Image (cartoon, rainbow over all chains, first blue to last red; front, side):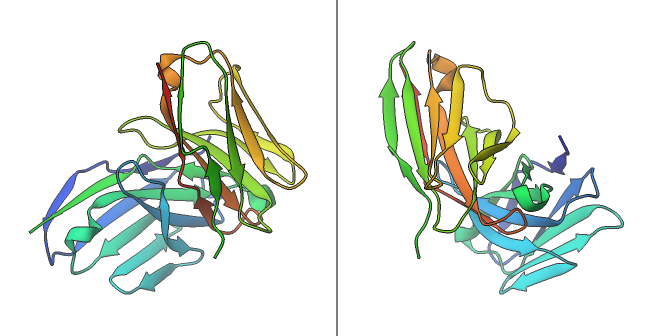
Length: 111
Length: 112
């Protein structure tokens, strides 16, 4: 199976900080990527979709670099509520779907 | 908006028993994925279905089987349960293979 790799962290940052996660992938065949956020013992929730070069939604910016095969997630002005595990997911399957999960990056935002 | 529905939410079984987990995808979603997530682990892919046919298979034990029915709901059948099967089981649904997948709240299975 194609691999998606992330730094597991944890990233411990103060409130208001800017933090960036990188995710690398080994197979260039992916059509799209997603960032999911997962709180402890809860289901992953979609944070952002990346279909082309990037996406921005408020404090969150995702960028895709196909030449270097990595996706980044930037969180500005971190809030305590941003503390979670962030999962990078590659979508490889064409019409039938084939989601490959990274192992997640844990973020802890401190007061 | 309708979300992915999983049932039951919690299940306690004894070793060697069987369990059936159900997943009802978002309407008009034709792809269903099953994942197993142990404590502190990332979700492990088990199996997926597209248009009621198995589309991919991951680390699903032979003791488990699954299918997707004509109404697109899916069931994961687990037999000869072992203590190590205790985990959160998530179902996700997707419309076509190119779009976002959405997860249900999961079934927490405890094998005692």
